[in-house]
Image (cartoon, rainbow, N blue to C red; front, side, top):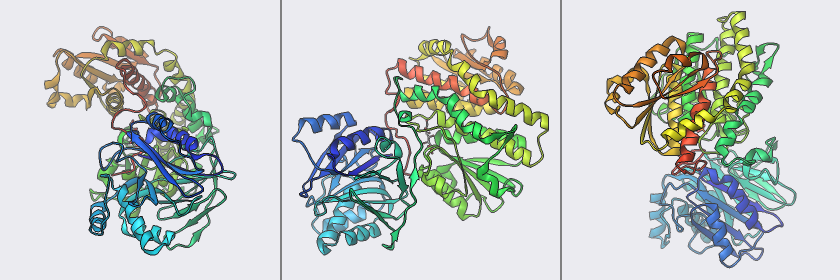
Length: 612
Ligand code: F6R
């Protein structure tokens, strides 16, 4: 949510900032801007509503801005509509201080009034302008830049990742963070700040992660980091292994389809290092061997698709372990006075590792004494660093706003954790363990079978893409999958869609069944397949059309009752969801493609939601 880039070096800053912003655009894309500081201390800003392409055009058509130090921003609006004035960077009244910001300044109204009473005039509706003006207020009063930074940080409440330039200090960027991601990239004769590593991969792989309340001062030759007490901090340097091409489209028309296609490989990378001699090993949990034995309740917490993975996880873990599992939306968890204590295991799931609600939920769980285990994709992200245990999904960078490969790898890890814990509790036989491992090893190939035969899915999508309303129904894990299938569809195609436990339809929602409505029935769980079939027929009897997602073995059951069947190979119960999700993702993708939607950057959305 909002992307920040900053550069100080020997080259012109603008091309580097624009390239970085293009990489970060998936974090927010309603407006963008850059500020560049010349060696003589001239600060120039260019910003506008719209995508980075519009900013590029604007910069190209106006008088050139030159300088080897600069900051840039791509915005997902929180305060103030997306327009040229509200775009970042925001400047203080005298134009000496310029700021880019990700997060929310919760007390900005009070601070704005404070400054207005002292004669400060505001241009924008943003909370960020308050940061620039407040810092200028302190700076003009005392003439001490770092004093001004700390005084400003003392006064603001909320979350922030900040990049700051001051025209009196050419050659320097100041960065600060609290509850919003910001990392530092170390180059040769150049240093960078960025919201995430994808923006830096073509320049450097050496990074450090700013911690909450740290402040960094960057020049082209040095990076100095201070804590909240202004003491210098030694930062640990990390090498990022991600491949540059992983963040490129590589011939695909969208990142989403590329990432769907990458799923078998992503699963392989997630699974193989954790398999040895037919057993699952989580090195990450090795030091806490009794984690599950000491646990009397499990919570799974996440937002959006990560929450949906949790719903699948509940069915899997409860059945296998006979330990109660509660799945909670992260945004509700911390305000619901959860019954969590030292004998609870709280599993938090997050692709970005930066989702504010998930982070806050995890902190609440830790405060209540629970053990926390994070399933995270982005290495070194805030959630990964704060959890008691972290298990990485190793899916590589996910750029499309709608998650696919991160979801799949989270799903497979939850199934692996299920079997791993089941084994530790002595609740799985050798035969069953072996059958699971065999199916797990086969999973990427079975996924490839689906991905090699997408014609039927494309055909089905082109038949139904112009409908206004769709419902996803299923029971048990199939129901949990419907939640994700429905979200995928609505977020990228803008078709109204809901998902229901199939048996629940008749308790009200069936009133919406009529011609022109499509029901996608997911029927792969054998024990409840017949029941889902009946629920689907209840809907088609009232005029709705139906598409069934089922296994190749069961397809015959449905042949006479529906116009389209999406069949997937059969696998182990704990892994079936991993196969089923693929046609649902592809269906959403091709429906959106037929509708001409902006698939990688759907309206109103942003990846990595770092505000509440
Ligand atoms: C949907 C989607 C979102 C995220 C949610 C959590 O396609 O991507 O629903 O799953 O915003 O994000 P993370 O996993 O980064 O915490």
